[in-house]
Image (tube, rainbow, N blue to C red):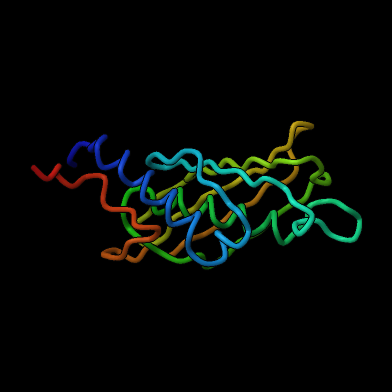
Length: 154
């Protein structure tokens, strides 16, 4: 198999960061991509009042959306797009504070499916754990991510 092209990895991170910040639901939520490399994605959300539920903690739907986004980025990080077909989240404690961090990794990259997980943290510790299954859709680009195995254009 061809070597991973670091130039493309860097451009993918920049392109995905812009798309997350400006397009659709992730932009509405305020999700920020802070790191992307093959098999790994990390992001954050600066918590605002609109993200809180009636108990003044981060709404579980916000946590799920952040996990799904980061897990999807990790799954697409080699360049094949796809779609989430299953997601499961376990809430371990309430998310309080002004910032949450999500770290996602690919557990298995198969021929047709990608299995990943994402964890959310605050300054006080881990808030939730999630597991996802993504269907691979070769030839598509999620978040503008190109194949990391392509040769660098001159």
